[in-house]
Amino acid sequence: MCGIIGYAGRREAGPVVVGGLKKLEYRGYDSFGFAISGSKIAVYKKNGRISDFNESEFSANGSLGIGHTRWATHGVPDDKNAHPHMDCSGKIAIVHNGIIENYAELRKELISEGHIFTSDTDSEIIAHLLEKYYDGDLLSAVTKTTEFLDGAYAILALCEDEKRIVAARQSSPLVLGIGDGEIFASSDITPMLEYTQKVIFLEDGDIVSFDKSSLLIMNAGKEVSRESELIDWDIDAARKGGFDHFMLKEIYEEPDVFYNAFYFEPEEEFVSKIRDADEITVVGCGTSYHAGLIFRYLMEEYAGMPVRVEIASEASYFKPRPGSFIIAVSQSGETADTLAVLRQAKSAGCTTMAVTNVCGSSITRVADYSLFMRAGPEISVAATKSFIAQVAVFMRLVDELSDKTLSESFTGIHRVIEECLMVDVDAAVSMCKGAKNLFFIGRGAYYPVSLEGALKLKEITYIHAEGYPAGELKHGPFSLLDEDTPVVAVCPEHDSRALMISNIREIKSRGSPVIALGGAGDIDLEEIADVFIPLPKAPESGDIITSSVILQLLAYRTAVAMGRDVDKPRNLAKSVTVV
Image (cartoon, rainbow, N blue to C red):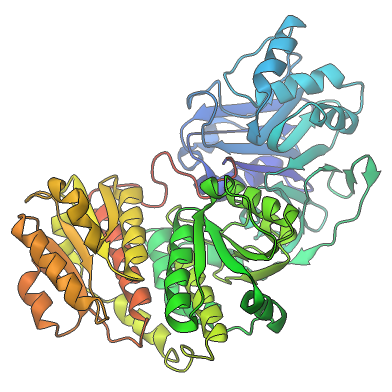
C-alpha cells in the first residue's frame, strides 16, 4: 500500500518524480524518497510527507529516476526505513510496493553471505539479491531475483552502470505511461496524466526494461506484447479545483457520478447469467462491502432474488460453489483480499464479474465481466463518490433484473443529490465533534447506509463510531448509551419508519442525544430528535443515496471542525494491495 514512480525521458527526472509522488501520496504518507541516476545515483529519503518536501534540500541531475511514498508494513516510519533501498556497493537502488512474505529467511541467508542491512524492511532484501545476481545485466538480475520472492511486489530498479529502469510486477499494481520520448512507470495513472494518456497495464509475472525510447516486456522468459490504452481522465479531474479538500470536491461531484454510473446499458449476456445463477455472492472490503449489502436488500425487495454478501478477507475461508455468480467490488481494482477471492472463484468454475473504477486494473483481467463505475479519479482516502457510483451500478443491475422498477422514477435523482449538498449539518457537527463514541442506526437498506456513515466518521475524525441495525441496540449496545453518546438515526419514509420511531424513543429514554435523518415535515422526528436533518424529497429508494451523501458531509464537516487531515487520515491508505 505504497506509491512508486519511475521516469526515463528527455526531462530532468527529479521534478517529474517529486511531482508524481505528490500525486501518489494518498497511497501512503509515512515517509518518502527518490533516487536520480546521472553520473552516479543520488538518493534522498526522509520520514514524513512528500507534500512537506522542500526542493531546495536536494538537487540532482539525471534523466532517470525512481521514487516511493510509504505506508509502513515492516519497520516503523523513519528515515532508514524509507525507500529507495541500496545494495552494499551503493550502485543499485530499488523501490518496492507490496510484501515479501519470505523476507526473513532471505535476509538471514544474505547476512550469512556478508551483506549488510541498514533498514528493518522486507523490501531491502531485493536490493541485496540484485547485488548478488548482478553480472552486468540489470534485467537478468531482476529476473533471477524474482524467482526467490514469495508475496506481492511492484519493483523499480536502477543501476549506476546502466541507463535504464527495470521493473517487475506480481500481485501489486504497476502501469506504464508512454509519452513522447519518455516512459513512466507508476502504481496508478495519476502521476502521468499531465504528460500522457497512453498507458499499458502490466500483468502478473511481467518484467520490464525501459529507457526514454525503448521498451521490452518479458514474462516467463519470453518477450511479450501488451496493448496500450487511452485513458480519458484529465489532470484537472485529479486537482482540487478550488475546494479546500479532495474529499469535498469528490462529494460535490456525486450528482454527475450517480448519473453516469446509473445510466448505462449492461450487456444482456451477463444479466442473463445473473438471472440463471444458482446463487449470487458479492465480495468486497469496507465501503465496497457496504455497497454490496445495499444491493442485497434491493435485490430481495425488487427482484425477489437472494444475494450473499461476504467481507473479502473472510470469504476465502468459504469455498465457492460451481454455478455461483461472484461479483467482486473494488474501487481501485487492486484490493488484494478481493482479488484473492476472485481467483479462488475462477478456479472453482464460478462466473465472475468485477465492479471497479479503473479500466485495465488487475480485477478486470481476472473477472469474466466488468462493470465500470466511471467515477473518475478519487484522491481522498475516504471513499465518497466511489461508494455512490458503486450503489448506482448496483441499482442499475436491480433495475435490469426487475423489469425497470427504478429507472423511470430516478430520472431527476442527480438534481436531488445536488439539494443534499446544500443541507445544513452544523448542529449535528456541534454534537458529534465533542463525542468520544457514536452509534449510527438504520433498518433495511438503511442499515448498511448507517455502517457506511459510521465508517466515514471514524476514518477521518478518529471518533469511535459503530453502525448497527436499529433493532439490535437492545441486545447489548444499550449498556453504552448515555448523555455523552450521540446516536445518528437514518429514518426516511419507509416500511421500517414506525419501528425506527420506537427505537429512537428507547434511545432517548436512556439519555442519549439523537440526530435523525428523515423526510422533510416528519413531525414525529422533529419532535423527538435533538437534531433533525430533513432529507430532500427523493423517489422510492432514492433516500439511500441522499442519506449517504448527507452522512458523508457530516463526517467531513466534523473532521474539519476538529482540525483533522481530511484527505490523508492517519494509518490509512487509499488502495489496500496487501492481505
